[in-house]
Length: 200
Image 1: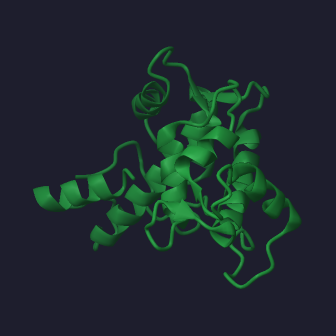
Image 2 (image 1 turned 135 degrees about the vertical axis):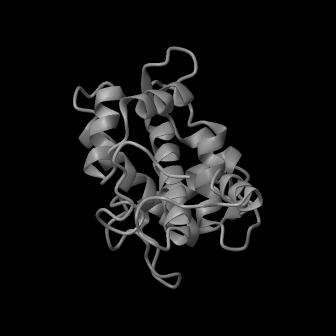
């Protein structure tokens, strides 16, 4: 099994060249910034001291004026949920807060017409600059998967989901590509493990 389109599995930084810059993840014992504290208080609607994906979804709006997708919010919570409780505390939230802000800056770089979404050509440019040379057919597939109604644009929340999933699959692929030639042989159960594990 291999990625097509001149895929370069080891371009750029770890994970395909689009990891958030240093400082995006402060140590657990660090002082939480006032901005993150303010946002945490706004998002934590039930005042439990924890935030779940439903609370996060209610607080985030994409460029279309819609709340972030349920899938995007669950994915982002799971990335910072150290105890697998389905919630994040204020320290984990600050990491997520910084992470989202980093991705917003990346998204704005490629949303050249400031439309609040990116189209196929902009998505192609984004992945190319991240070190991937995907075929037009694959980019078209990603856009259709992200925008099942009009098949033409990707919102910021779907962009984050796509990039995280590509990063996770890249890391899983890299672990199995012992020859470092962009091709792997994979058993069915291992394939299912990767597919299911990288989707959440």
